[in-house]
Length: 71
Image (cartoon, rainbow, N blue to C red; front, side, top):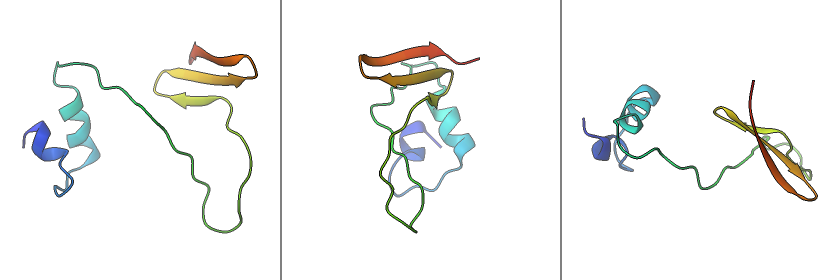
């Protein structure tokens, strides 16, 4: 299975296959957006702080976003 085939919208592949396709020695993948969900019971109005994606922690402050290396 090639990376293109594994990531096409009609292909079914495991998370392990996706990770292997992204770790092929090419350019490092970039995350352009992230979403937060909490379920379907009641409306949620709030904020996210301390968002961790892989080894980075994003701290949202009034002066901007601070990025730290997560421990």
